[in-house]
Length: 416
Image (cartoon, rainbow, N blue to C red; front, top):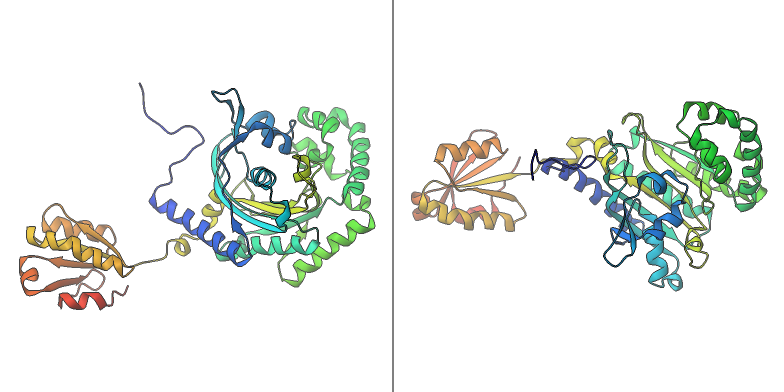
């Protein structure tokens, strides 16, 4: 191999401090999932291509431009997962879980999309999500949103995020709205972007979600979904709104939040922020009552959401994620002390306290390395300490140093 060894474009190395923030986000999500009764599921990183191509739509940007597709040695077309919901739905079908409804699943892990890398967007990114299958009541939507809100609160970013939601209504309402959109955009077809001209024929709702400035201006005057909602759809959305208000979750209705595929219905929502530049959505979800059926399974109502861990971690206050913990440095002053220091460090760790041995170099260098590492205490062992069964304890914060009996280390109060 010639040239400089580098990361693949769009990927990142998570160094220890960043990994700790990621871990904090993941553990917070796992704890909330457990409180809400969501069991953890882990699906393969790659699936048969049809799992994603069918669920995301062959005309979607994800499938047409962004999926990592490859043919394996057996000639099968496979795809690295670009999102988590389709894999969960596939597992629900292939594992025969329809007799066990309702079911709640939580997942986290890496996803892959060939996108233009920018802040908060990577080609290998990390996502966590929740899927609730078997409930067709709007109260399930409220609980799903509450789960997301509680997660954002637990990692200290709810104040930076705004809940925006909309309704797509039922199939009857959607069909009426689709017809109205086609009529409207057809009269302005020449002003649409190239992508939206394609969408007009195949997926007109997606024009409302276009990032093209010309499309955005046209969409401002497009018919509004609320005008085409039948009575049952209006009631469903009103129940969701009432439930969110009852929980005290701040929100705003955004009629431009849409999902282009027909298996989506009723509630769609996003938590957005203005703290991440162009990548304003940190968590998005909605109801997808037709997804499982689209994939060949029984009709199964569902609602869920997904969030990018990369973006959540970027927003999370580092002082919250990187909580201070005691670090004890165990230092052997000579050969005899080093032999004993390994055992002493092991004893400290057995108490659930972080301990690190510094085993090479001169005594002064070891102390300097321990201090640079952020150690709060140094436990120093030399031949004299080993013989007298004592330990020299230095507090790096106060500078105090004392002699402590070896037997007392088991209960010594290591305070920050």
